[in-house]
Length: 337
Image (cartoon, rainbow, N blue to C red):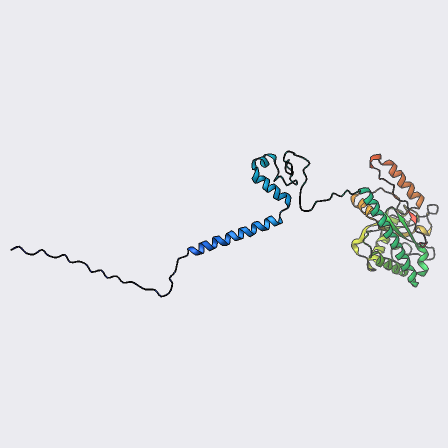
């Protein structure tokens, strides 16, 4: 009898189900979606800000570009609403290449400035300021009793270069020792008082020293009137600075010896020994810094200075002449003489 077939053993599979308490994790897909949402909102608010800060002309140009980009590109410019481009094209009318007008939120208004009228107005204002300065100098002299004896040696006048303040010598009251640059005590107090007043205005200052025609024994070869006048002008500069005037206000310090006598008929007169301070106007400063100043006797009398200016102006070509000749030196009414 045959043996019974052997039964196949089936494997036993045990399934274990692990239960997790609460809700399980759903993955990180929501983070990506949230990041996309934040990026989109940032781009939206950025777009709204750009639209709010862009002018109407630029917005129109952007709209025209998206409507007909090829036409705008061929016409040139950055957009049909933009007229600030140096390239032809742009503006409201794309068929025109010139004469476009920028259309912005605020319309610009062109202002035509008359340069000649502006300069004339500036010169008039400077003249009034210099006249006011001369009044302050006079008031300073009148209010100081210690300067009562020297008032007659002060001369104030307007010149083409500005306000000229001259301190002249008197035979019995010299400003310096004979042949020396040592300042007398009353002269020192006067210069320091003037320096304090000059510091109140922004104008630059020119200081020039003058002597009479009396020469040193060595003539012009050794220490002469040229060196003496320069030393005296520089000594006056030091006293002005000591009185409170800023050093940067001094533009030039000149020593002119006896080249420009105040009294040409009496070259050895005491009045020719003097210190001249010029409170320069803007035109004189510009001419000096530019180096093309028309030379004229800065300390000559009114008739000589006016004649020198007239001859210099007539020598200039017609196209280069100014609209009106410079004013001649005039004495200020009521000034100290």
